Image (spheres, rainbow, N blue to C red):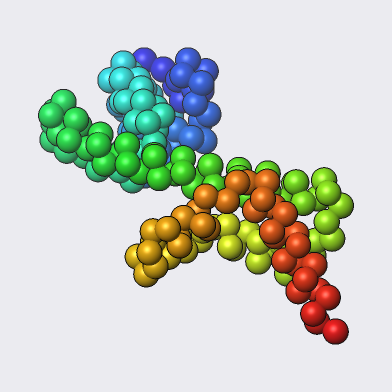
Length: 174
């Protein structure tokens, strides 16, 4: 049996995190001693390891709570949730990849001493954020060969188009 401090040291989870997990209903101490201090045992250690494993594969704390609240977590019910969790993680990875591409794109413009202000930066990032939706819309509304003109533009050429398009816009403002 371990006090919260000992349990924290043994598991690497801070006392604050353990109290937070208790507040969420994820992990309760097995008992409290006569002073009211939380006491944890092997069962709580196993629960904490489950929480850590589920967090590692991307489950939110609310989803973990729902899994732990089930009377019995069967491997079958857990296995049923894995394809859904995989899709969530793939979607997150795609979002991260798009964000990295946007950062690289803006960095290339900055490396070329391109004059950026917040309006232009926001416009570029917004365009890149919704690029997939724009391409899907073009493929739906135009012939494939027309839409492919836009989807097959190499990255370097897109940076040049953004830079040249902005300069053209700047010159036409007067």
